Image (cartoon, rainbow, N blue to C red; front, top):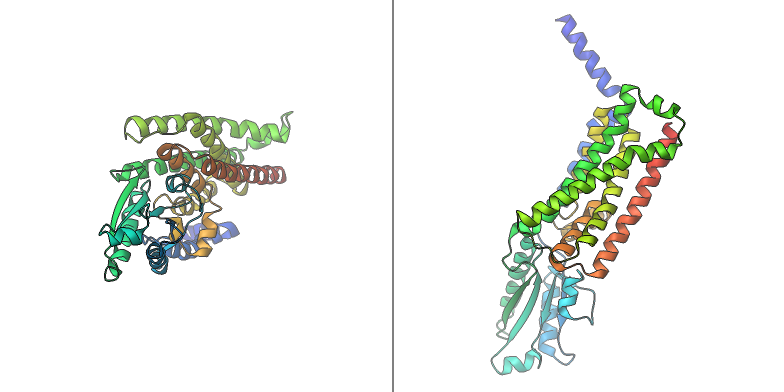
Length: 356
């Protein structure tokens, strides 16, 4: 019994002796519980609503004000653009369109009908938008009998797989590249072969490139594989360019490989590298908009979500596959990924040199 107790005591001391392990064991669970408790909400808020009506249409203006006063809707950007273009570019989640002659005149003729264009690339969010819009109109029926003509865009059948599969594709690429890369340097260090690489007549950047390039290639093979499965097996539409999709995947894979390398330089062994990878992946997946809308998160959590490379790739992939790839939306998300790739690779290289 004394031997068993001594062995247990030794394992406990070894587990908590490393300051990084103490943070992982005691601090991060509290932080994650706090963050996820605030961030993970299925309630749909901050719906970006665009409006399209004549300047002299008072009834349409008052109706739009009721939408914004409800607390569910916020004004969308892209004013002056065509309603379809505002939805396609991602500037609006929905656009409320009044009749061409004005809603006030249409009500006078007994035809008070508003059209609501809804972006259904997120099927769950689209259903909520439709319900909220109907509730807002129902509250004002005593003032004017209005009807809502909902037009669902980019996912007419509101199939969950059309929304979820591109997100799962992004998650798989992120998972594979980060875990494999984070384990790479830790394994070399644990086996004692890192010293052999350092002693070889090569530059630091050559070692780093030689260790990371294979995982970029493997990530691109995975991108081709999951893209083919998504289109051929799950019947997800591919309305955009394959070239744009694979270029975006290349930038994203470079970013995640750099993140994995950075995690590996911070870890002393494979166990720490694996834990570090999952500590990054778990919040990255949950705050990417893959399952829970980023717009519904509190402002502080939303700020952290905008530092998540997975969020930009999920948005980009859905835009290319379901909407055809709006140039402005693709360019903005690609620019964010490029900046993150440069920052992550720079930090990984600096940390790698310091480790050597």
